[in-house]
Amino acid sequence: MNWLDQVQWDEKGLVPVIAQEKDTGDVLMFAWMNREALQKTAELGRAVYFSRSRGKLWFKGEESGHVQTVHELRVDCDNDVILMKVTQTGHEPGIACHTGRHSCFYSVLRDGVWNPVDPVLKDPESIYK
Image (tube, rainbow, N blue to C red; front, side, top):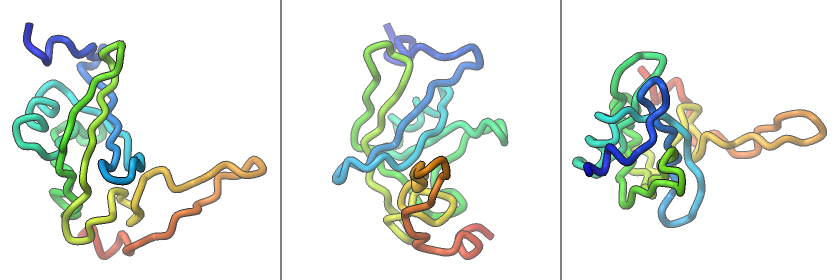
């Protein structure tokens, strides 16, 4: 059986994907992949997602230059979530989030309010043209 056939795709043909920094264990982001995106990711060794809002493949870093080199792909016990061990590279290697932060998970719930706790490393206005 083809390894892609073992993935439990949802009703839209997608699977959730978590990008985790290989060296630190930091969770950088969550996104979606379709079959083509997962296959290209495995072939290229670089993160390729499926953009639900744009309805097309999204090569991480194609606009921002913040590329994710993929070292390892894992699937969970139910075959319905992918974990990628990545190194964030590019113009500013430590930035994974479109807000210019290291991780998309930069807010913490405190006293019923989401508080951003991680700094903006680069103004997103200067990242995206």
